[in-house]
Amino acid sequence: MKSMNDPFEPTPEGFHRRIEQKLNELQRAHAPVPRPHRLATVLALCVVLLCGTALALRPFGVLDFLTARFENSVSISGEAVVIPTAQSCDSQLLAAQVQDACWDGVTLSVSVSVRPLKEYALCMETEIGADGETYNRIWRNGESQLLEDWLAGREAMMLFLPEMTLNGVRVSTDWDWVSDEQGETLLLQVPADDMVHETELSIPLRSVLLSTGAQEQATLYATLPAMTKEEYKP
Image (tube, rainbow, N blue to C red; front, side, top):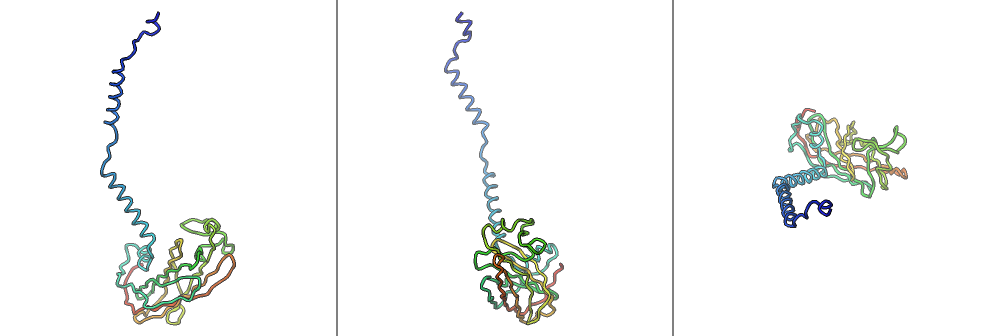
């Protein structure tokens, strides 16, 4: 009866140890082996991310705008871009400066950086609103969102699109801009047929605090050196 209830004898302990040893050997044999190229790939990815961040944070200039808009057709050289010889801004709310400018014989392109001096959330007048009347939405990063969500507790300051004055004469102005969390970088373009002499330009900066409606009218002044014509095809 005992043999019928337990027909198999107990397995020897040595057999158990041998099976466990063999299983461990098989697991080690099939374990993934670290490969040097994997580490290289990870390091390369980190470098790309850091470079991308650096490019995203660097200030835009005229060439950045033009190459982004007219890729494969721009021939403007770095020597064609000029830096203002002097500039000032009388705003109490904004830090504004002309970064650089270039001239193709027909159009003067000027890059302007605008940043709030306090912890305001700065936006352009065409980015914000609903039907141009109710300031409750903003268009950023290719999508529309509630202004309250974008502000996240900050106070909104809206910047009106400026006109430009050359040597005391106001000229029609076209605009483009790149937004970030610190402010705006604008590209202003105006018709100009003579930039071979030093030019005084002024750019009015009108801003409004949406919470109170308080407005400021300031002006950015800059002096551009004599410029040479540079060809490009938009």
